[in-house]
Amino acid sequence: MKKFALLTAFIIGVGILIIFSLSLGGEKGVVRVGYPNSPHLAPLFVAEDKGIFKNQGLKVVLKKFGSSSEIGYALLTKKIDIGLMEPPRASSLLKEHTKEHKQAEIKIAGTITFPYGATLVVRKDLAIRLTDLEGLKIAAEDEDCVLVRQFKQDAQKYGVNIDQINFIYMGCDTMLPALEARKVDAVLTKGSYALLAELEGHKTLYQNWEVKPGGDECCPVYLAHIEYFILAQGLEAKTINQLRAGLEAASKASLEDSYKAIINHTGFPAEPLSNFPVAEYASPSEELKKELGEWVWKE
Image (cartoon, rainbow, N blue to C red; front, side):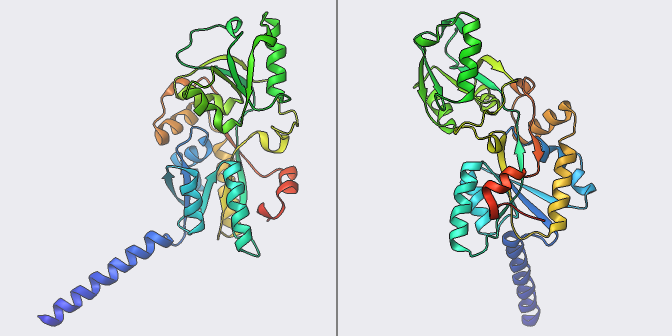
């Protein structure tokens, strides 16, 4: 009886160790993907929901994180194999990672892009028209930014006195918090940030999807469309290519399927999602490879 009890305890102990090791290191053959709760990840969500990853021969497990910092930590501690991070945060992670390793183990395997465009979003408590902007505070990234130049040109056609608008310049990441805190009355930003602002209840007053990145310092062409870097580590070239093929195929899905997948994975409402285009997968461009060098995964 005592031997049986010892054997049972041993089996249970081994089982616990196996479960613990799997939770840390992941199941063999499974690609663990860490992502934030974002409306700009349609290709990832569609590929999962439509079985596209499976069709590519991949077994993918999606893990939602509360912040990019958590995703970065999970990458560094090898809790995930793929992490989707915004370019500024991904760059910081890669810099630190490169300092500690002679050869970087974490690489940019792809990107998630979103149409650029110019959008003016006004604070949710303001009921104004385009001609009511005089005297208001509008956040923009830079005086020479293509978004500012195009907005001024378009607004003047409607009789807006541009000289009477108080432009306040700040980084894109700080615009929405400034709008929420009522430090500014409106933000002039690219389309992807405008969607985030509308999801918080703010209102679009002006939009021009024809605006393209102008190559200015605040919006370099090679980076302007990119919402997320797809960071990968410890994966074979075959797996990376299968992942890329799956995301590329998912980017061709209908808008209806893309909206459904976003809602399914994020819980965001159908409005205002349906008023905006959706993100797509894109392989790193030649200019991006040139700019970021060893950080970009090469076949």
